Image (tube, rainbow, N blue to C red; front, top):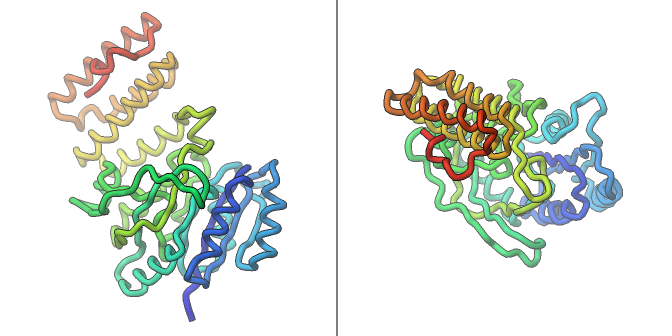
Length: 320
């Protein structure tokens, strides 16, 4: 008997896209799966469409997010996990696509490598619809250069929310999505897991198609929309986890300074100051040379704030 795979998909107003996603699931060569779609309160025709798909294929289940759970994809994913029965878990998004052999390749890998608790594959970004895809990006070969955790945090290896297949036991110890986060939830969850468990397998094949330029919690009218509280919470957790890893600390602090400059350009000095405060809290973990650069950043931040100027042309003065 083939092991059951639970595919868990949150959705919100994606009726124009989720049909293609579900078609790619139905087309899988591996057939023992359940697909749990949890609606975050859509007001388009998602309900009608999902009722159609659940009647078309009984392996597709459609639920509404319970009203006592906070709005957002994280609560939908966690609720879907609570309903799931699979030995394996595949988180997925309502606008992305699977190749026909995505599940088969991954479950075969985990079956043949019992020491591995999850595996990832390469992904391709695309524009257009599922039949007329314009490919614009593909992962290079996935390799781990030093430690998996350090490589993941510093972006040397990409583990996207939708690429891994996980053994269910990974999530049985309350390791689920933080429902208070509105961004960077996959980084938060996966960094927590990988820090404790680095038994990952790599399939260097393109098994996932990721749709580009869709409206999401991270985009608003085509522009990136940074949720600073979620951003700083996740980055702070990473820093707290490995405060003495200089490589990780410097990498994260540079990201936080990027967020500071981003908010400064918008003249949102309060949010920019929040970013700078987090960086200064880890000043002692930096080398003396970098600490001097940080003092320069503080000085010029105060100047820009006093002059009520947004940072645009002088980025070099606000970097370490």
